[in-house]
Picture (cartoon, rainbow, N blue to C red):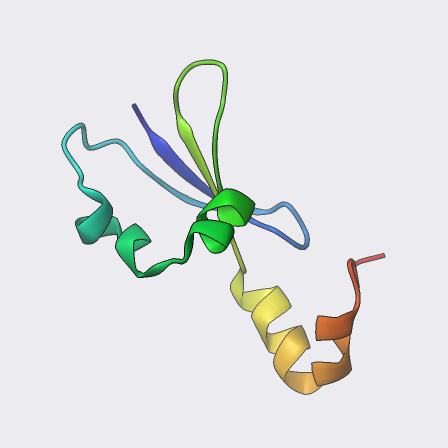
Length: 76
């Protein structure tokens, strides 16, 4: 089982982990509410974990333009 991180705004691949025995505590998932887990973590058909995160570029854009948080998508 691999864990793949993708930006939730632009879709950019941020990184992957291929370790077999990682706990939710090691990944920080235990810090998320159940609603956040549902919104951010999915499993694909191969059983890999797909995690939605924010890449550095989108994070910088959000810091410069805080009103973007109100939009569903700010990437054109």
